[in-house]
Length: 259
Image 1 (cartoon, rainbow, N blue to C red):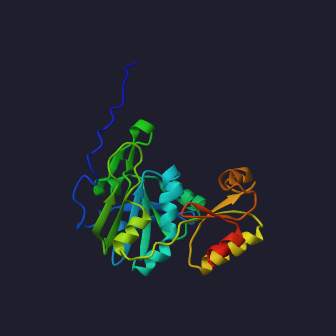
Image 2 (image 1 turned 90 degrees about the horizontal axis):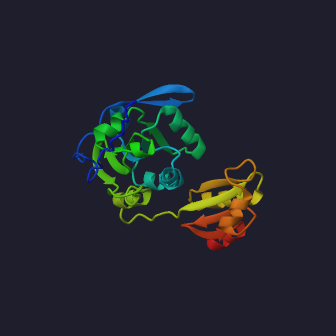
Image 3 (image 1 turned 30 degrees about the horizontal axis):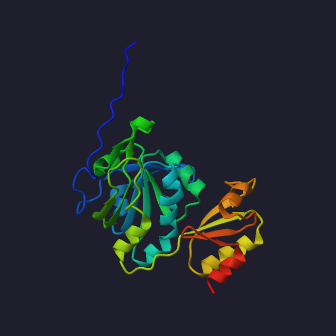
């Protein structure tokens, strides 16, 4: 039996690997899943006549993509709408089933998830990154772009360096590009549990203040245990609310923070 070793493709010095700003987005057909059926998305039609933010990432269910990249764009949807953005879309080299499952797991309702299962869109964008060394095969380099009526106005591609750089393709950077004077809403994470009345009150207060939030449900039916909540918030009660990484506390503390 011959000993065949996979050769890792050298990473380009920068992305995209060809000039794309000022060009039309590539026209391909993406195969998505919606309500249990297949849905064909033609990218030329998808971008036509709209202002669209696209962010692309290495993979659904991966750490930075799930904890930060996708949730923050979801949170800032209303802020982007005020700046004239019609649609926010996330592209990943994953199949339609995976992207649909990720949407459900993340509770996403504002960002459209576009599966580039055959890597055609990513190839045409000059954004293919070789992740064979970790078993991922071809994936997308992490980037964001602003597209107006199908034409790419601006691309924020992450610098080529070791690891998974996440420095410029974030939602806050894109919002500041669109309007440098835009007020950046706080990044809010709220730990809750089922049947918590104070959690309901906290959600209503955040909605009243126009703040979106990422919810982490604790307990047997949640995604983390109450012991994990104690580890991060030094508290066993819910809700526990963080703003911009700082612990605010429970509902009463949230009320005081707005006083």
